[in-house]
Amino acid sequence: MTSPPRSAPPPAGPAAPGTAGAGGGAAPASRPALIWAALVVVYVLWGSTYLGIRVAVESIPALTSAALRFGAAAVVLALFLRVRRGAGALRVDRRQLASAALVGVLLLAGGNGLVVLAESGPPGTAVPSGIAALLVATVPLLVVLLRTATGDRPRFWTFAGVTLGFLGLVLLVLPTGGAGAAPLAGALTVVAAATSWSVGSFLSGRLRMPADPFVATVYEMLAGAVALAVLAAARGELGDFDPGRVTGRSWFALAYLMVAGSLVAFTAYVWLLHNAPISLVSTYAYVNPVVAVALGALLVAEPITAQVLLGGAVIVAGVALVVSTERPGRRTGAPDRANRR
View 1 (cartoon, rainbow, N blue to C red):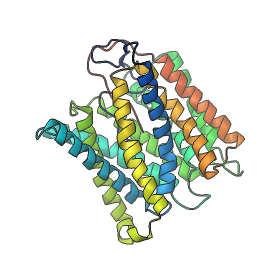
View 2 (view 1 turned 120 degrees about the vertical axis):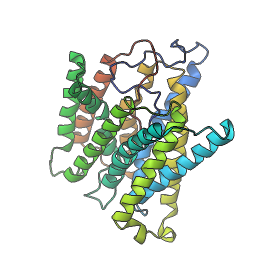
View 3 (view 1 turned 90 degrees about the horizontal axis):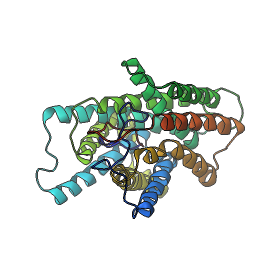
View 4 (view 1 turned 90 degrees about the vertical axis):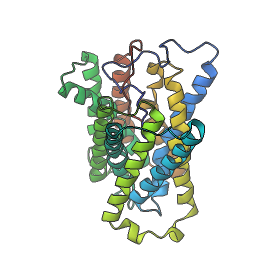
């Protein structure tokens, strides 16, 4: 998972913009190739981060790997903004800083950190990367429930999509005893991660955040990295961590997560928000899990059982129904934030 920009609308949100553009207009006809190229980047890179996490935690302690990833990505992005925009590029007030820190802890320490924990451990207890991605795909459904709890009234078909998605969740984690079944404790850990991510996504559109999404992301990543480092120390990870024992494979995966997941795909996503209809950009929510399942099967031989296919298909169908039903209207102001890897 990677922190989402504040300019993104919430998945299935109540006032999401219809077109991601500064003036609300559709993308110029000359840009379709660039738009689809950026979409492919978001589809593949964010979908592949679940596999990257699994490889990274093979020899790097779980929360330590997440802290390193987001800390390094925050430093790189902060330096880039400082060079491009000058000394005041990262200036925010205390309230904005506190809001960004809270959202960062919920998204990255709670959301991403719990996914990393769920994917770590020996076979039989660790959640396969593809199943983790399918479980995280429930985030748009959880956001709908949060909206409802705070007085919003989504459409009937939105609730139908939520019901369908959670039915898929039950099918996916239902204990069967067969090979490839999701470990129940790990699956519940990922559901807790999705819940934390949903709360962070929901609150970020209602708090006074830094206006620039890149600046907000710097502080979110820093806060998330600090929280993850504290939790890693509390679990005894830092005392046991020996960089010399980390395999080249895990170092490469960690670098990939930082560069491809946290920087390249993030930039492509922000560009899409300003150049493509948000209804098209939102398709990542149900394409990423498909990519994750396929990569896990092809590259590390994760089993794709009938249970995974059925539960995953029902979850993706539910998310697709929610995203398509909550078809956004034209941009009328600064939009809220969407969930994102």
